[in-house]
Length: 135
Ligand SMILES: [Ca+2]
Image (cartoon, rainbow, N blue to C red; front, side, top):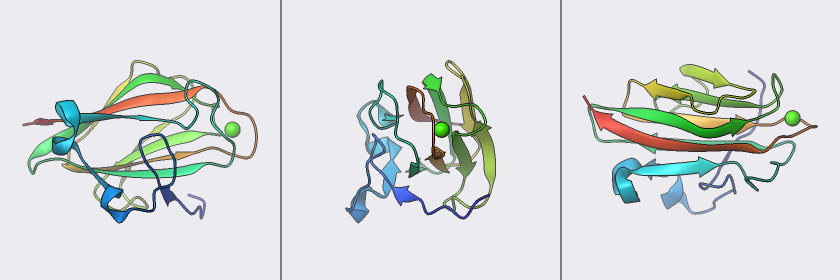
């Protein structure tokens, strides 16, 4: 993986300075889930983006990512999802191209997600609902 610097971002991929927003606690969200979207959605996202989100759910639960809408430049722009609280390790899923309707589950109550776009060409981006369920 490249040596990108990721910025912690809000639900719309805008950089946040408030450390209280660094962990998204799913149980505290309305409907116990949150929908994350690329910046500008449904208009095209920007080039050169690197966004990072951390999610936590109650101990013993699993976290599910539902790709409500997902169109990014194939093979150049990526959403990556992994377990735990270290976004440089334990990558589990890599998503690129068109994946609307797909779901991916992390077998852990901690998960992270990154979105990276390269220097040129963008698409409409994504809306991803992040929820959890107890085993
Ligand atoms: Ca691109």
